[in-house]
Length: 299
Image (tube, rainbow, N blue to C red; front, top):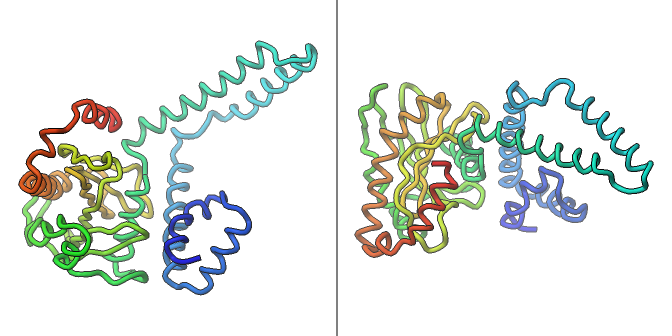
């Protein structure tokens, strides 16, 4: 197993979803690869912190008597099924009730968390921890101009955006460093910022939600990705084929406000550059695709 294969199955390994033989291959690889060991430690910490955050949220817990009531209904339904030798109407109603309960639980989660802590947000947090907070154990960053030539021309926008200093209602934001780096299999354009003695990462990467080959119009309302993980929050805005994310230990409200001031102008520049390069891209966009995008984002 090589490093790329490991990254493809790392989350499945942590979820105990793999065959025993594959688990052995991963363990053998981790014995010989310090970089993947460090990445595995980061992934495990992020997953543990996310689980702990949900466990501490009282509104996401089932009622105290839920398990007892479910066991009693199951027992009664099983008794009915045993008497007539087939699945009874009551048993079917129980199954429907379980599905309804699961649906209601899902609705609670959706209402409590604006956007799930998805793979993009987890990678952004991992890159911030690994790179901006100086815990780098995997891969050396490269200059933005080199990354623009080798990987994605949009990284060139980050040479000047955001400016070296940005005024915000909460105080100035200053640029500390600009480069391109990788966490897992995802490459970022990375601008490290300082804001009120907090380290903030502005990250630009390909948008996982965009349909292949289509540049969607900007979606510049900042979206907060779930609860804080390891004390870090993520806010994102979308533009063209890319997402711009802010990661920091700021609280969600302040990070969202900062995203409006700092990230939205970057998105506008990304979309402006796209329009100059491919002026017909947005004009030929299928309206139904735009509507589907807005519905999926809950707007």
